[in-house]
Amino acid sequence: MRHALAAIALLAVAACSPGGDDPRPVVAGSGPPVVLPGAPGESGAVATPGQTLGTYGTDVSAADVRFAEGMIGHHRQALEMTGLAPDRAADEQVKALARRIEAAQRPEIGVLTGWLTRLGREVPAGHAHLTGYGMASLAEMNDLRGARGEAFDRLFLKLMIRHHEGALSMAGGELRDGRDRLMTTLAMDIVTGQQIEIGRMRSIQAS
Image 1: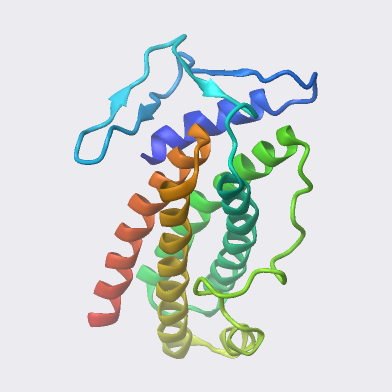
Image 2: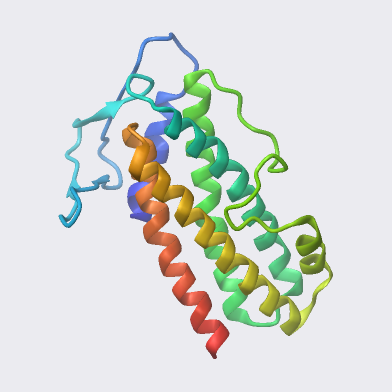
């Protein structure tokens, strides 16, 4: 699904470029494959070049907007946490994990930002407005900034597992109540990717 997200991100940037107010179709290109999610229990299908995947702004629910606005702030805090790892982590597995998280979540922020912009919604600044969903408190972030070596690794894994679990809850709400095709596809990608990362983090903890 990460390859699918990369393709969808390019589509989102194109569809969210400045222009008129009319909805624009999201069309699969000839680059990386776009995997469309199937029904529950069914496998996804690869979109063919030129296939219309949906439109922006025609079938958007309040849940879609809440998901986009909330996930931007959620991802931003994750990037703050991963940005500390290169200089503070002792375990190379933790450093590699931090790089993977950043590589996944930075482009996702771009997709979410572009989608909100296309709708004419203001993109939230920072993440101070977001509470719950596994977000680290200011005190916890300060503890993480002050930690070094194995102490950093332990705290990073503890906080990031909780953070990911919060993202799974947010994505689950989108899959339950959302209607926009791009947002539900992104939510599925988050569920798949972050479940895998939680497994990796728990394996590092146990090693």
